[in-house]
Image 1 (cartoon, rainbow, N blue to C red):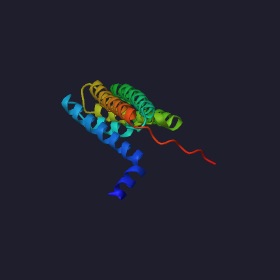
Image 2 (spheres, rainbow, N blue to C red; image 1 turned 60 degrees about the horizontal axis):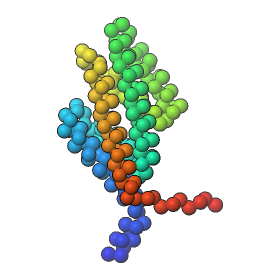
Image 3 (cartoon, helix red, strand yellow; image 1 turned 45 degrees about the vertical axis):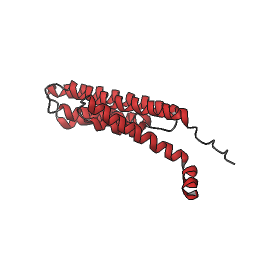
Image 4 (cartoon, rainbow, N blue to C red; image 1 turned 90 degrees about the vertical axis):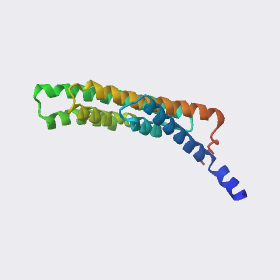
Length: 168
């Protein structure tokens, strides 16, 4: 029994982190399913990425995830509409990936933009209106980001990570 207590004490911060991830992903899935979102696991993936042990870290991750997704979805939507110009698909793909890839390289916290852009652009290829996949992606990611930030804030009220020892 003492070994279990020692392990729990030693890995306290990591266990709180796992709890944040489990709660955020489960709540994201349940709420996305209840809202009947088309792809509830996008909110789950976002919650898993955003969930942090500190509220500040979670909120920062949520904001950047949302900003990246919004930028990518809007750019993917713009290029999806450009299909009607007759521009070949490979050219549109390069026009999509190059700037969003550069954004992710220059600002790694916005790397979700490239993925969101590709998802919206590809999903819009088989639909009459490309607006639906863009809105769905933004809603799914937004839900996961908000839930993960809220879970992290609430858990942060009950747990303070151990102080970092100064480096010598």
